[in-house]
Length: 105
Length: 153
Image 1 (spheres, rainbow over the protein chains, first blue to last red):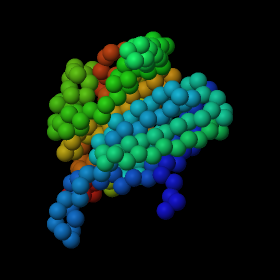
Image 2 (cartoon, chains in turn purple, cyan; image 1 turned 120 degrees about the vertical axis):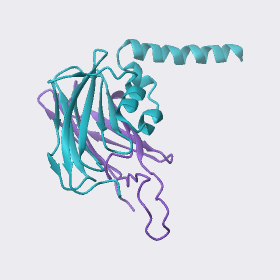
Image 3 (cartoon, rainbow over the protein chains, first blue to last red; image 1 turned 30 degrees about the horizontal axis):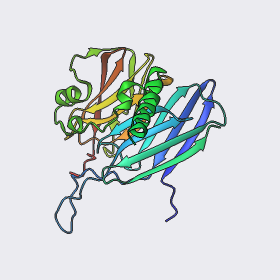
Image 4 (cartoon, chains in turn purple, brown; image 1 turned 180 degrees about the vertical axis):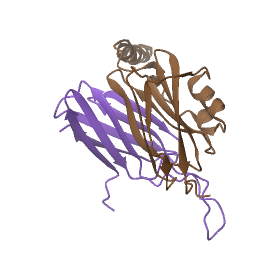
């Protein structure tokens, strides 16, 4: 599947850069039951999201299972410029990870 | 050989030292390990204590929680927390969830006190947002009524 795992939209609004992102992830809580086998579906979720602007961390998120499926995240920071690169990377509890970059519009 | 290890050591500590002193990395961010004990806690107080090291909270009118009054689907509850204070971190707790700590965000020095995401809520509950600002913990809460729970129960 060539599905993009992180979508980023970055925009300057005055002197503030507004970042919106959606990550593709099932975010299983570990509490749901598998109706066929009767067992619990194991927890599978993003634990950490790091957002960087030109190599500086502007936001580090620690997440639990309570973040919704295909997580949405939005934040704002100062000091950005049009054309700057934003990098977003996540890692989950099973050792999976993904990252993506976008330029500020 | 010894000389090489010595050099390596100096270079790495030097780089971290410079980054930290330049204020690029908040101390919490350098140690950014996933706070397992805080996510494992099953009461709000335990989770707050494990995450932030204190349960000494002050209510603040300068923290806004934007969330629906009634959420029809507890699996996707949009929530936005914003504050005019210079925030070091914003953490969101959901009182009646099996693990109350939902998410925590550590900010860089240029990041505004604003974060928006979507969370799951098992049932009608208080949302508690805690902002760390200038070493103090400030909180605000909002009740969200949930008609269908979002923990698969």
